[in-house]
Image 1 (cartoon, rainbow, N blue to C red):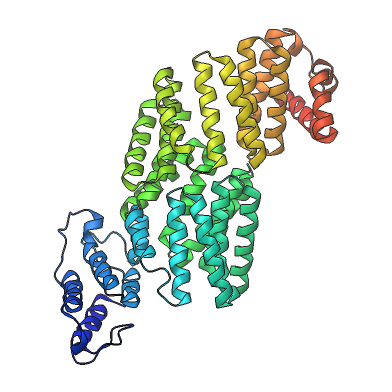
Image 2: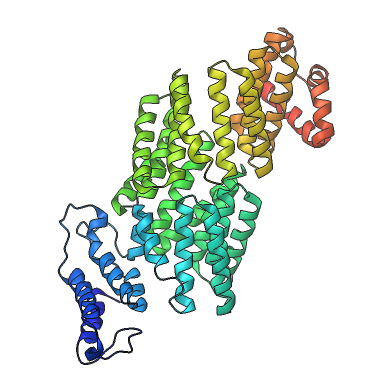
Length: 511
């Protein structure tokens, strides 16, 4: 319904022909309170106009107030219709997005929750389903994953009553992104594949785009970057065909992450900047925040710390304005990493503790593992090696449990670095060879090169300075690292370790 239709429906209720949804009363039967509430709703819709430069939330205040008045009248059907209105905005930043979607784009989670929760249990099942979908995605945006799973239980019960298999895709997608956020990547992939198969079967290209995007994010977390890129390129192509701006922005952000992980920093920066511009134009503060976080990460990795801190600070401000705790934690973690890299370890420790308080309340094993890894890095900078070892061992365990291979390889490499500081040569090689095995398996070339350089460099420094003076062969590598390689063969299998040794030989020959 449009504004004019909603206003006319209310006027008809006050006139001679009651058309108000759920209203069984004639106009003459309306109490003074009921008349005043209906008139207030009309006035908010017809007379309230925000100033052109007013905040986004003020531009839709008339619609929100009208919905609250209608809800007070128990006119839930008409209040529900307001959620789906595409309100005209003074700055025309959002196109045709409905009101409840705009609140999500802007990060106004509290107002969005209030709209959904006030209508739950009051409407037909097909509308209840949409409310629960929105409620679950809102709780996900807030990082309250336990609440999302409760919403999904209710969502499933409604779908079972509706008895239409075509409706299950959105629920599977919500379950997928929630399990992913909690670190259960295999479960996430299973749900996303179910959604993709359903969307392909019914020919729903929009649902296909969502499923491909979420699948790409999950494969990225497993270190399967080639598969992730394929998914996101498909997502982008579909979104362009559908002219779906939200999905375009989502795909661009994910492609930026892939380029960053592969060390293609110029390309990643360009993609993140393109995303930032599109998100700002659309008023999509959630993805503006994601773009800023990505830009901060790339600048930090390039050693441009001042630019990184500016990006992280901007992301932090927006996250706090939206009340998006996960995004706030990520921005704080980025700031802590930047400060630590600049040698400001005490400041980094303070910022990291702020992040740690948030992460502990987010029910995300993946984020917790990254947080522990950060605490380990800061402990190393502070020369608290005992604490660093404890943190790294915990991070390794967490990354192994959730299947996060890229971060597992990094944690093993960092633990080896702690052992270098302590002069524990055998442990250094044990950690770095395991790290190399992980990066070799997922074919992350930039990380492979880093580990190989470290291995040969430390070997020449601590064991045999003449090792590289003769050709490097598999036999020589097995002889020098006999104990750790034998242990790894027993643990992971001879074939995997042999492949890793071949990688070492090939890299040295290429050099």
